Length: 241
Image (tube, rainbow, N blue to C red; front, side):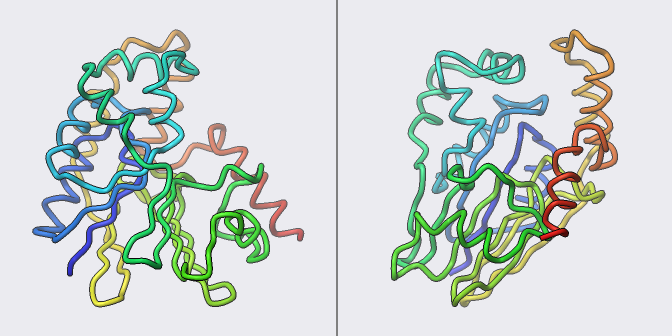
């Protein structure tokens, strides 16, 4: 069975379309959360994903969008782009899911204050997810943190699935994963980034031009020091442990 795993689409339709074209036909599709925020195409991404009938995990941004009290201007704007039926569908996403009896699917861990980043110590990754593990679980697939992380800790494989549409590692390629014959393989594919940036620049929700430029740069370069300052500080802290 060929399984396609997606995470963190973040309203980036060209990136989503590119990974679906590249992946080809799959027997089942898993989405690990954060579908319709931080990008210019919320409604389009919801429609594309919904037609695929995937297993969907509730992301933190998904939860805010379906809430009647959105957290910030991004959540509010994204919610306004969606129909009632689209919001109802998103509200039915699972908080977690156990696939094939042994693979735990979650968006992230909210039991700890730190993020899971490439140099996060094994003990901190284990602590972040220990409350979710049962004896049957030997794989944990999650998104949320926007970096690729692959670890085996005490017999459990932890994989942070790199995003489809919101990147922070200086690589603008969209990502997806294929799970087949017990092997998880990451794929990266170029997409029509200029289209996403063009549509983003048309958005009028930003009151602060500097803030808008930061998000545009993050799309364009998959890195922006000011927006990623928290990640950089956490990585330095991890390095000192």
